[in-house]
Image (tube, rainbow, N blue to C red):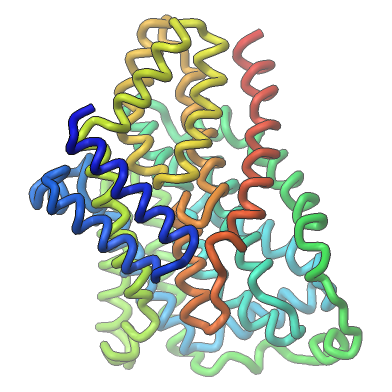
Length: 427
């Protein structure tokens, strides 16, 4: 590697260490790291701001912005209070039942939407229901972020890396359903059981609070029915456009921004009210993270690591598959899985072609990248969004508070995916 590449690696590791140890605010660390990358010419303005492979992923940024505005408008209708009471009543006020219900809802919604949109919608409900039942909200938010990453892996549109893989490999929506969904269904069930053990100290049941919840009428929580119907109509259209992306060919970011614009223009909500719920620090953090990772791509660091791993397998089908699975999980834990998959896709395409079009390589890449995102607080977009929402609501979740659970979940889920790939494709 060149001197610039080594300095870029050092800058990235320093910024990542600062984020992990929380010695400085994560936004400061990400922007500082991005600034150093530009200063040492590891990347430049063109690559950082305009290149699709090595720059800021504006589709992610504007998707988040649009959905945050829509959620901000929805919040004014009282619908989240309605859903919080409904969920608590269905769980009969019992914390683990509530967590299991929220996990299933999150995982299912993430398969139909994208995981970031799902956590933006489910987080306000979680805050309200935990407040009603006097529960610590952090375990529920962490579980939902992980459930969104697991559930999103089931479909082509559920997780951004899947969209990249599908485009590169020529895979269809039905391909993902057939090859990914069976494993993900099993993993969601296992994850629910795992949460029972991981968060066992957080399930304090208060029969008095539960009784109070059961007496509430969730319909009374709706504050503005007209605005609710307007918001739901726009949200339904946005969701439909997400699902119909292969037909309509509108990027999710465009759909989200159009939905947000229509909702603000067609209702009595002011611009100031609409943008009040936008998590600006989260958006800036993502921008800095994209620039840092893009610099590693630009200097060839990630490609050299990936190619070295590919060469180490010497074309062996089983070994290559397992290395792709576990290496993808490991690397996606420390760098965002979107640029990682974008970098690995050409390499996997070459590997697949050299092995008679072995499709198993693509599934190994998808499973490893999607599940590996759960390992740390910055491994997936949904994790970063959850941490931003938690901080904004006065209940910050630290990097290690998330990661100590994430590592366990990633190890268990990837370990279960190993025999799945082996038995289905390698025997």
